[in-house]
Length: 122
Image 1: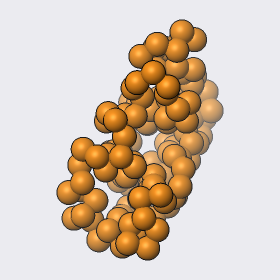
Image 2: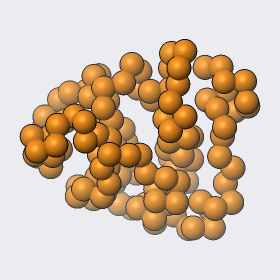
Image 3: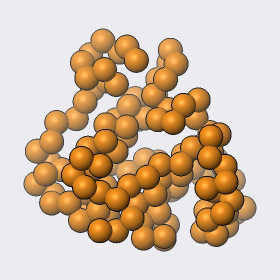
Image 4: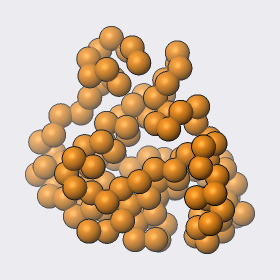
């Protein structure tokens, strides 16, 4: 299975789903990321604020940051190559990157909040 790596901008916590004003894109991606893991995807996230060495030690990421700066994050690598920049991959994209069936991606429910309901709590 192809390795997928997500390089996040500096976030307040590992998932970015924390604090009082949570970005819905991060909530959706956190659910999609967890879904991909449960489907067996070889997927990992790195947070610039918490794991800067992962950014510095990866030549592709380091070169990207030198050209685009942290404003270009998030960055998605698939098999060590740049696959997506500036936004998080959608569930269908994660499925394609990981070789997961498109039926599994289309039939899986998407959580509307980090608590699994519509309360908006974290």
